[in-house]
Amino acid sequence: MKKPNIKELITQSTYSTIYNPIFKNGTKDIFAYEALSKFVLNNEDISCTEFFSRLQFNEKLFFHLEKKNKHHQINDADKSKKLILHFDVAVFSEKEYRKFWKEYLSEYKHRIVINIIYQDNLTNDNLKIKKKMVKWLIKHEFEFIINIFDDLDYKVSFYEIEKASYLRIDKEILEKIRKNISYFKLLNTLIDFAHESKTKLIMKHINTKEELMLMEKFSIDYIHGDFFI
Image (cartoon, rainbow, N blue to C red; front, side, top):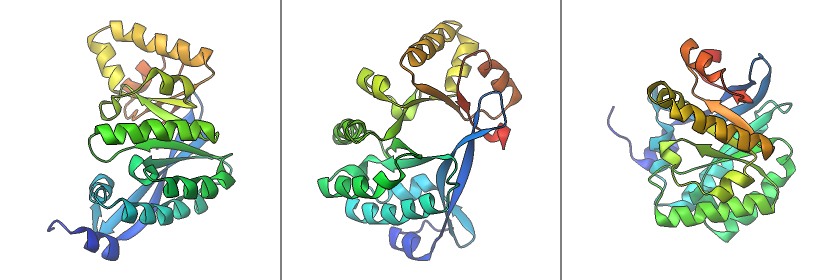
């Protein structure tokens, strides 16, 4: 399929939300759902990364589309479970955007968890917005996730780790452990820190039995991946 332009993506693609379950480790109990957008154009899936990255240079349009997007994701979700919502730093870049999100999201504060993302490389400007966004989340008492051992989120401060409601660990650390046992100690140190700080841990992208068996050597609170779906 010819690469569509952003106008075509917006006006002609169909939108839906996929809710990926996150389980309490060692059980089949669902702790939360992660809301993921799905776009289809001419019967073909469009990568969310591609869709949203094309909006990076039009933050106002990005913001207005995300207002509609989050409205659907929140309204259609299982209200008895936590809901993880992904927010690109771009839609928090302006004061008027933050004012809207505070007013809109406060009603759902008891059940939403915010995961900070960025569709492109984390530039210095985006890094500044991310730091401001973390402080904003803390000030207004929203639960949020900080991603650890993730190549896409490599600029993480001690302040963010300390203040996060959840630390989400990419399974890549498990592959590191297989090759170098020192990573075993590193992960356990992080886990001890999280437990002492009363921060919950999520392991993501567990897709095989072998990954699950290795992960079970650690005291992880929540887990998700294709292996459980």
